[in-house]
Amino acid sequence: MYLVKTPQFIQKLFPNFTWKIPTQEKVMYLTFDDGPIPAVTPWVLEQLEKFKAKATFFCVGDNIQKHRSIFQQVTAAGHSIGNHTFNHLNGWTSENIPYFHNVRHCARLVDSVLFRPPFGKMRPKQTQFLQRHYRIVMWDVLSGDFDPSISQKQCLENVLRKAGKGSIIVFHDSVKAWENLQFTLPKVLEYFAGQGYRFEALSERAVAEKPMASVA
Image (cartoon, rainbow, N blue to C red; front, side, top):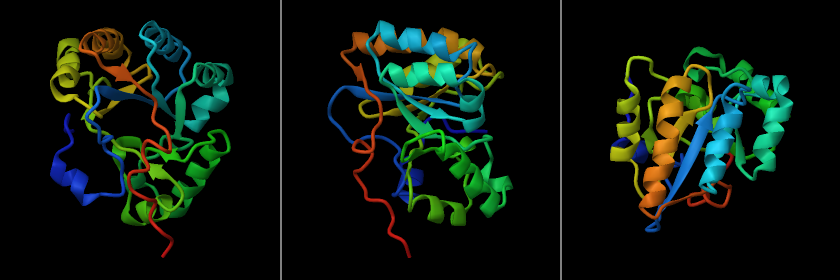
């Protein structure tokens, strides 16, 4: 079970997280989790280039290590990068110290203060520690491309109906999401570009509306 649109009350419960970018401009922030993957990520880069779109890739360290040339393609294209742990760990089922070490392992490959927890799940102590060092980026809209139980059309509608100005939207450049992603992404780019939107990469500056939590 997951929410396509993150409710305002949840966003307010975690004010130090970045859920969307406050703006009145027609701009969106596409994000891609779990890559780089040879069978998917290069295709994503091709689709983005067609619309001169920039995006943010929250990369799994193990995948970077296995596919360094694909990772270099992402950075060379001018997209921004975020840390998504080295082994795609679920914070709720991981002990704190091993989780921190896993994040740091990924950090050796990803030079970024942007961090997104896999599954959006962290324990309170994990959150308290990591937000001292990272900008924790969540999302406004979850496409659901990873969900094999929804149709391609439903995945597309999740984004078209819920996204708007300043939305941070989650896709996955993964094999699991491929069927939904290949249908949805080109249509999302075409639709919103036709509505006058531009697509930008997240940066430390973009998510700096609220300061990092100070060390207690």
